[in-house]
Image 1 (cartoon, rainbow, N blue to C red):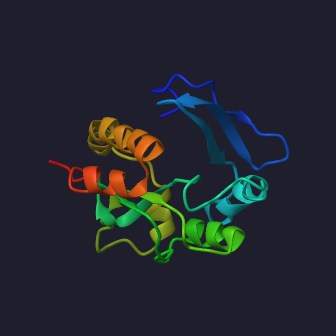
Image 2 (cartoon, rainbow, N blue to C red):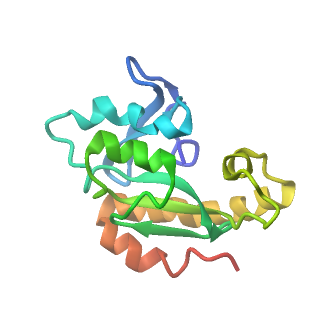
Length: 167
């Protein structure tokens, strides 16, 4: 999305355990953070941002996260919800002290029956075919994020959740 929107390249953020880019998208000021921690410590990247007096995580934050419960290439926008066993989301909820924040769940599943270690499954490299599926879904996901920026979570959910299924 950083490349698509022609934002400056991600650079290490001062005192944050993340890479950061910022700019304007669809008339909105945006900051993109990419945690540089282990996934189960993702909230650390948000800690400084969430302390800003004008930061409202219910409207100013959209977390993009992998989801093994969704088919590869599908996605869902949610206004809030549980971590659902996702340790990265648990870390974010620990920092925010809330599960009331929008998230875009990106399908990377389902894991096959022979998978013993779910962490190993989600950290494995995608095959060329899997890359193709995700690449095909990226423009719609990018449009969904732009809609979230301009029109809010509910509008993005109404417009894109039905479209977030692979063909």
